[in-house]
Amino acid sequence: MSSFLSRLAVTAAGVPLVLGLAWEGGWWLLALAAVAGMIALHEFYALMRPLRPVVLAGYAGLILTLIGASLGGSQWMVGGFVITLPIAFVLKGFGDTRAPVAVSVATTMLGAGWVGLGLAHVLLLRRITEHGRLAVFTVLIAVFASDSAAYLAGRLVGRRRMAPTISPGKTWEGFFFGSAAAVFVAWIALYRTGFMDGGRSFVLGVVIALIGPIGDLFESALKREMNVKDTGRLLAGHGGVLDRIDSLLFSAPAALYVIMAFGTT
Image 1 (cartoon, rainbow, N blue to C red):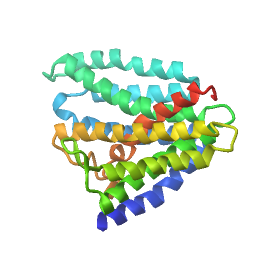
Image 2 (image 1 turned 45 degrees about the vertical axis):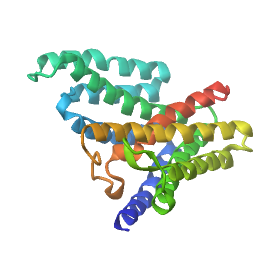
Image 3 (image 1 turned 180 degrees about the vertical axis):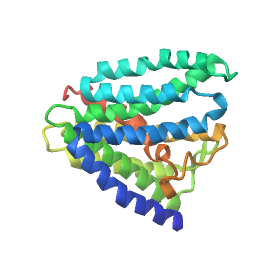
């Protein structure tokens, strides 16, 4: 019960803040993404510390990726991410760790790509002409609703484990209710807007419903491999920031490319 109440309190305080800054967009949303991204990336590198990531290079890559997405779109976003590689290699050369270069640099790139590119796609959603607010609101609320419904259903009626070797707490019942919540939110938000309306809103909801849990399981697999339960304690019952946004980091890119596939950017 205490875990549930702490999750509820964090959600009640955090969701309005996130949605308010997403509504404003621009530098406000960039600042939110940068702060959340730096904390999440710190948590990831702490989790992967035995592999000796080049932390400063990852932070630089994250910021450059986000700035590129916010100011220049997808091309500059990719450029910001790619430059992480030479920065990581150079800084690794100045370091005194004995970890293999391939392992250290690859871990650095994984963190910068997972967190940086994931959040950068949230910024790209907000940049969609005319419908940026609607797009980013729909994706954020669908992901939040899916996570919450999956958690509640798993706690209340969950019986069948979805991936017992990766995340024993995930259940098929939670997945079903979470998926239903994501599809419902996307459909209600978009079906009569002229943007991703009708069947396209249903497709978007299904994609978010399917991809979000993969992001969650991806983080769970990393934590299990490193023998860690949560990546942090900053958000109380939610764990760390990375625990809170893991689904979004996979869902935001998928949602953007579904929207692009329908030619509505």
